[in-house]
Image (cartoon, rainbow, N blue to C red; front, side, top):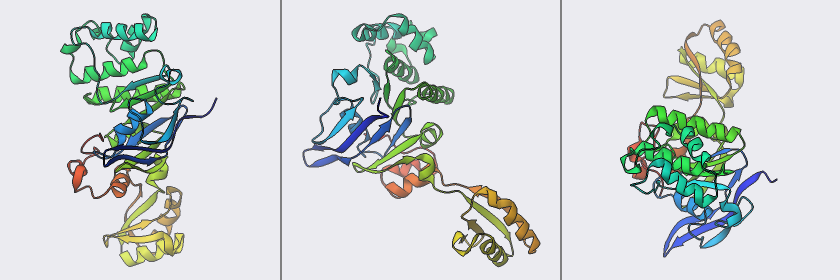
Length: 317
């Protein structure tokens, strides 16, 4: 069996004169949690809809589970939640899932099993219209889990959940990947993506800017050194790790491009040279910092509301 679950080549979608998705080449591998990131209007949900066969691309191709998007052979192996769950309001959560299970040819015991997985078993008899936003979202994820699909495509799976529910959902997604299922999710919570995703794709203005692991995106670690006198800190650091690996930040902190294995030798050298060392700590760029570097100034446009928080202003639509 191939390790590639989703593969696109030059995937493009136009709406009249507007280019919503522009020449996207994307690859999702078996058993990974893949995070799809993008600011408001980036083309993220449009891409997911094309992968599910809900809309057709203008040009380009996609293969999902070895078949064209929307082909019966692939659809049977996919569970999806796009934008928001839609259920019959006057049926209970359990009865809504029973309807879906019958259409899919899934045995009825699977309904309670997926309700249990999303912590809705005790509320399964309540009508859907009485559910909170978080409960509706969990029921949507439960519906995606029916039939034990090989690929889950989830648009904002933690939307509306409280902190405990978000943590439970993250654990569930990691467990699913560990059991061999593949998860492709969009999220506006960068800390969430950083915690659970193996790889991420960043899309902006319809174009896929990068596809990489979170660790590769964040780049190499560094050591931040505060000490006095500052010129001596710079001189010693350059002697230990080399001139090119040392830079001064804000005229008070020395950044050393080295991992924490160099910290003991650097500390000894600084103390031996008579430096008063106030702090040496490891530093890594956050995914949020990398995201804003790629997509623009966080103080303007669609990301303005995200300044100072781990959240983007809005999920891309």
